Image (cartoon, rainbow over all chains, first blue to last red):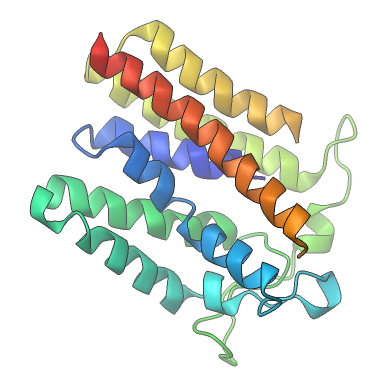
Length: 175
Length: 30
């Protein structure tokens, strides 16, 4: 489910209007782009019993990703590179509570920072939706509230703000 | 992950990202 990551990009855009939206949208998905590449190469198996994503999703690697990506925007000033760093790092924060396996400190680390909540998260709560889905809905609404507040403050047109929110909420309901 | 799943995962990210970028572009052109 990707809606919360999109919502994070917009929430950061709302508070950091100088940061380009396309950059933030790439930043929030860098760990997943790495994961997709490594999973396709069978370096990070996606079978639940063999799950391993510590090269793409460990704390250290996400900090490295965030730093390298932020460096690309260094010349545009702190008002751009810092939001890019935060956007990339937000991926760790959003994946940390509920993930197929607890997130590692670094690849092959004995230390894991997350929780074993995946099976619980996928159990049904209301209207055939899982705990994971409802929690993500709350997170999406919270992040979109941040975006809307910032976007209005920056003078964005209400119909374009609504369109962005509609895309993200629809995406969450479609999954 | 098969190539088919890989393409689907990438599309699930890229299509909404393009939509959101277009909306943002519309705002800049306004």
